[in-house]
Amino acid sequence: MFRMAEYYAGKSVLITGATGFMGKVLVEKLLRSCPEVKALYLLVRPKAGQSMQQRVSEMMTCKLFDRVREDDPDFHRKIIPISSELTQPGLAISPQDGEKLASCINIVFHCAATIRFDEPLKHALQLNVIATQQLLSLAKQMHHLEAFIHISTAYANCNRKHIDEVIYPPPVEPRKLIESLEWMDDGIVRDITPRLIGDRPNTYTYTKALAEFVVQQEQDQLNIAIIRPSIVGASWQEPFPGWIDNFNGPSGVFIAAGKGILRTMRANNDAVADLIPVDVVINLTLAAGWYTAVHRPKSALVYNCTTGGINPFHWGEIEHHVISSFKRNPLEQAFRRPNANITSNYLINQYWILVSHKFPAFIYDLFLRLSGQKPQMMRIFNRLHKAIGLLEYFSSQDWEWNSENLNMLMSQMTPEDRKTFNFDVRQLNWPEYIENYCIGTKKYVLNEDMSDIPAARQHLRKLRNIRYTFNTVLVVFIWRVFIARSQMARNIWYFVVSLCFKFLSYFRASSTLTN
Ligand SMILES: CCCCC/C=C\C/C=C\CCCCCCCC(=O)SCCNC(=O)CCNC(=O)[C@H](O)C(C)(C)COP(=O)(O)OP(=O)(O)OC[C@H]1O[C@@H](n2cnc3c(N)ncnc32)[C@H](O)[C@@H]1OP(=O)(O)O
Ligand SMILES: NC(=O)C1=CN([C@@H]2O[C@H](COP(=O)(O)OP(=O)(O)OC[C@H]3O[C@@H](n4cnc5c(N)ncnc54)[C@H](OP(=O)(O)O)[C@@H]3O)[C@@H](O)[C@H]2O)C=CC1
Image (cartoon, rainbow, N blue to C red):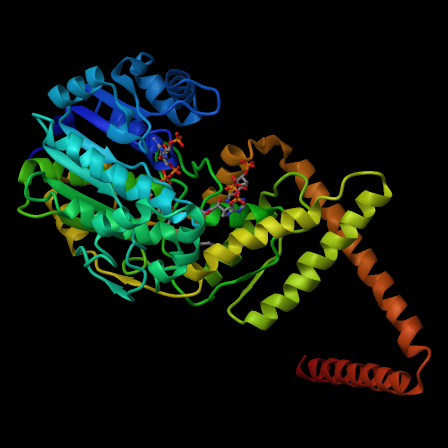
C-alpha cells in the first residue's frame, strides 16, 4: 500500500489559516512526518503592525517547531508565505502569486475561518463562506491540483441530534443570502440575524454549514474532502503532549477554573464532552488529503472527527480531572483555590454566580479601591460570564456523530502510517490527557514556569487559610448577630448540637462494640 509520507514527497501544498491554532500544527506535522514535501505555500495577511513575512518568521520560532528544528534546522526554506487577505476580492493575491499557485499547487488545506461565536453575520459570511468560494475558484485554476481539503466543524449541523457523514441541505441558498445582505446596513443585519440563524446558536455554526454546501457544489470539478472536528483541544501526543496556544473552547474555561475564578458553570455532568486533540484532527486531515488524492472518491467525503461515539468522556468527569489537576499543578497567583461545580439547573447556577463569583469580586474590588488601586474583578467576571454564556449551548447537550468514513480511512492505511498519523482515539486515556492539557495551558498559554509550582502550592495553602479564617469569622458573626439575640435561634442551635452529639456517641459506642 502507498505510504502517506511518500505521497506527500515532492508535493506543493497550499494552506490557509496557517497562523492559527490548527494551521500551525498542520504545518509542523507536514514538515516533521513528510520531510520530502516540496513546499508549503501559506496564505497570510499582515496583522498588528507586522508584515506577513515577520509573522511567519515569528511563528517558526515557536516552541511547537522545536522537534522539526532539531531534525532540519533549515526547515523554513520550504515555507513560502503568500500575502492574502481572505475577505478581499480575489483574496487579495497578486497576479504573479496567483499564477505561481495555479502552476504548482497539488493539495489545498483550507483552515482559515472566523471561529468567534459573536461574529457579526456579514463578516462571518464574508470569511467563512465567500472566501471559501473564492478559494475554490482559485483551486479550479490549479493545473496539478489533486485534493482540496476543507476544515468544517462537527457543530455545523448542531441543530440535529444525529449527524451522519453527509452534507445536509443548507439553511438558505448561500448565493441568495450573500445578495440580500449586500445592500443591508449592519444594523438591519444585526436585527434579522436571530431569525436567519434559526435553531443554530451562533453565526459561526450557521456560516460553517453554508460553507459545506458551497464546497459540495464543486465536487464534480475538484477532489474534495470535508473534515468535521468537534471541540479541538490541546495535543495528545505530538509534537509533545499538552500543546495549546489559545483560550478558545474549553481552554479558557479550564484556565479560569485553575485560577480559582470560575466556580460555577451551566453544563450537563452526564453529557458527552466531545473533545478531540488537535494532533488527532491534523493526522486525520493529512490522511484524508492522501486518500482523496490517491483514490479520488466520486463525491466529496465527509469525515466526522469526534470522540463521543468511540471513547466517551463526560463534562462531570472533565470537571473532576481539571480541578484535581490544577490542585496538583497550580497556576500562579490564583484568585482562589480551584473548585468548580457544574450544574444544568439555571437557578442553582445563578445562586452560585452570586455567592461564588459576584460576592468575592465585590469584596476584592472593595479591597482594591480602599488600597488606592483600580477595581478589576467585576470586569473580569463580566467577560467570563459573556464567554461561558456562549459556550453553554455546547456543554449542556449531547450529539451523536457517525464515523464510518473515519473507520474506512483508518482501514486503508498501512500499520506504519496508522502509527505515524495516529487518529485512533480508542487509545486515548482521558485522565492523562486532561492532566497534560491543564499543564499545557500553564506552560504554553500562560507561559508559566513549572519550577514555580512549589510557590504556587504555597499560595494555595495561604488561600485555604484565608478561607478558614473568613469562615470562622463568619460563623462567629452569625452566632453573635442571630443566635445570641433570639431565644428561638438559641433553642434550634442547642437542638442541632445535641443531635450531633447523640449521633457521635452512638457511632462511638457501636464501633467499640464491633471491635
Ligand atoms: C473546570 C470546569 C470545566 C467544566 C467544563 C465545562 C464546560 C466546557 C466549556 C466549553 C466547551 C464548549 C466549547 C464549544 C466549542 C465548539 C466547537 C467549535 O466548533 S469551534 C471554535 C470554538 N470557538 C471559540 O471557542 C471561540 C469563542 N470565543 C469567542 O467567541 C470570543 O472570544 C468571546 C468569548 C465572545 C469573547 O469576545 P471578546 O471580544 O469579549 O474578547 P476577545 O475575543 O477579544 O478576547 C479577550 C481576551 O479574552 C480571552 N478569551 C477568549 N475566549 C476566552 C474564554 N473562553 N475564556 C477566557 N478567556 C477568553 C482572549 O484570548 C483575550 O485575551 P487577551 O486580551 O489576553 O488576548
Ligand atoms: N478550534 C476549534 O475548536 C475548532 C476549529 N474548527 C475549524 O478549524 C479551522 C481552524 O480553526 P482554528 O485554528 O482553531 O482557528 P484560529 O482562529 O486559531 O485560526 C484562524 C486562522 O484563519 C486566519 N484568518 C482569519 N481571518 C483571515 C483573513 N481575513 N485573511 C486571512 N486569514 C485569516 C487566521 O489568520 P490571522 O492569524 O491573520 O488572524 C488564522 O490563521 C476553522 O475552519 C474552524 O472552523 C472546527 C472545530 C473546532
